[in-house]
Image 1 (cartoon, rainbow, N blue to C red):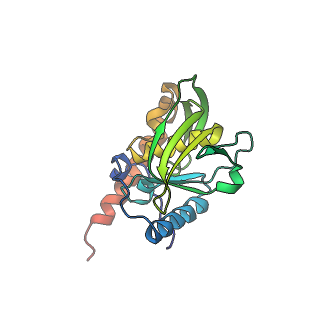
Image 2: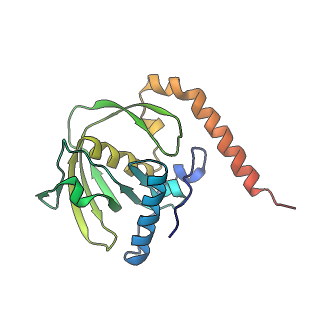
Image 3: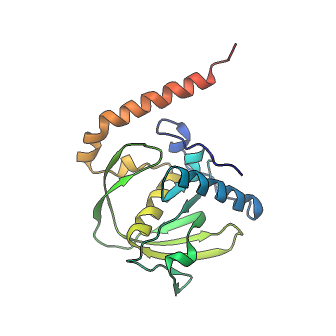
Length: 193
């Protein structure tokens, strides 16, 4: 399956909550591979299905953070052994803890970054491409990436999580991106002829 173009801010699908994944197996493997291809082409570390125009509870990540070893199904694993990963129908639990502020970007917001506060831990219950259930416990960059991509599947964007100061700092760029995307979507709907 070929890579998909990444939807930019202003596309309504980015604000819609994705539907649960119901079909597992070869079709989902192929979709996951296409999403990974799109993510790599854009030089990202995570990508959610809504970002490629699919309203699904599905995302992929490829994070190699050697500082924090994740636990997959109760076993500590090396990130090299499990990456990249596909998460279908993920439920993310954020343990109590103090949030840290980091600069985030998003493939649906090219050229825009901002400070986001997140707890650097996550427990993720999900299904893989074959439909098998798993639990991932992670910290650091992987935890932040999982939270970011899970948010996308819920219709929540990283600009919603930015600190107020960074929302104000990026407001002009965000509005410009919104206008450009809206204009492109309108132009694509016009009948040719």
